[in-house]
Length: 258
Length: 287
Ligand SMILES: Nc1ncnc2c1ncn2[C@@H]1O[C@H](COP(=O)(O)OP(=O)(O)O)[C@@H](O)[C@H]1O
Ligand SMILES: [Mg+2]
Image (cartoon, rainbow over the protein chains, first blue to last red):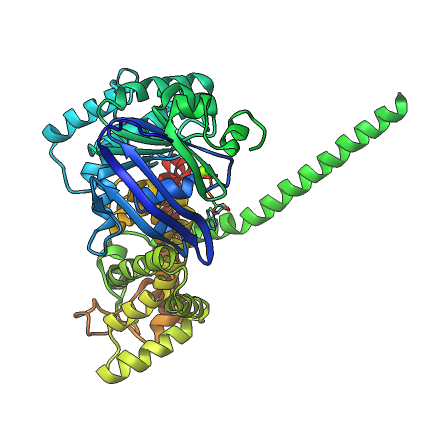
């Protein structure tokens, strides 16, 4: 991969292994994620991209029988150290899922503010500006500013996904994880989210799973290629797409398997 | 051409027949309800007057008398039963759905609730008689309430477990991923999303125990007067209906009809409230 200049590393995994019961889904993945860049994870389905990204905010361990080994360093500190509370980690590492999942019993406003409200913040003078700021970051403000009291589930799929992005951003996480955030959306909604990502990564470090290689090429700074629970290679996106070091990467991006 | 025409109309004819049969089936199912209601209104409506709501049972031979003591007795027994039964039932339901996936204790709790739910209600009365009435050496409103509680508890627990399990896993994960503690996710995301259904189940359970008779015979026993406290015997609507109904007096019979009418209308009202509140905004929540 040669010598590269990295922005300072925000998130780093060292020999990360993930298990479902006895089955090992990740076989020791080491990856560095530079600050304020967008890192795309690509690879055929079932190769462990979701598992990997769910290890980064300790959500993996919520699946029955699941556990992880190895290290995940957030700003140099291991989030798997025994004294670390996963709840606090998840406040600093937000997540957006494949399917939009706004809370059904909550309004648009409550959805965006839920991370704060459910942590005990009730003061509208605190919440109002956070809701506005987050919805603007998620490029949704103009569409919903007059209907903040409507249920979040009334929005279209693409709007719901941007609502979920706003919800994740409201607690001001330095890192945002996205697991195929546009794969359930139409092309126009997808384009809107890709646009907002460009602005977003100026403020937030983003790790995004995608199985759409054009999307990875369009929006990411760096790309990591996964195969069968291993990370085959990672590097600057243009380098990975034009001159991959590993023949399996080349085969995948030229569409020969996956 | 005429052949296919024939088969076509034959098919339509069969479909007609089926429709009519289904319609008649529905009518047959609904008739008893309306027949009961109509009969109750005819027999009991005239006895529902001011006295009915304000007076207690009069000694035989005296005119007047009412159901006030039974109404108070049922309200307080159902109230106390709900006070304990709803939170306990919800706690069991939440535990079974959210924590009890793999634990052996959960299997045991589920089994115990199953047994409790299928126990004939007279046996619940016998059980409470054994553990409360005998040690207290007295029938009491409290024992009656506890018997009703034991019937309400498994109803609330089982239905809330089922309804909470219907909330998709990805909503729990969405909450956890926001850095919200698990207990808070369960209360404010899972339970809140399932709430319209859970509330409906609770109301149906309360309506059900309001009409229970058998478990009260051996616990709160009945009382011709207002209950003098929760450690004293108490009347209840269903028991008082029975008392009035088996008496030989015309006057009391009408009171029994009126009591039955009140009970049926209350239960119907609870059911209607449940339907209306659940129907308008409960459905869309669960995908
Ligand atoms: N809850 C689970 N239980 C058991 N095995 C799982 C579970 N989730 C995923 N796996 C397995 O782990 C591997 C990686 O899956 P995943 O991370 O979802 O892949 P990707 O997101 O790249 O499609 C697959 O072989 C999958 O079958
Ligand atoms: Mg996946």
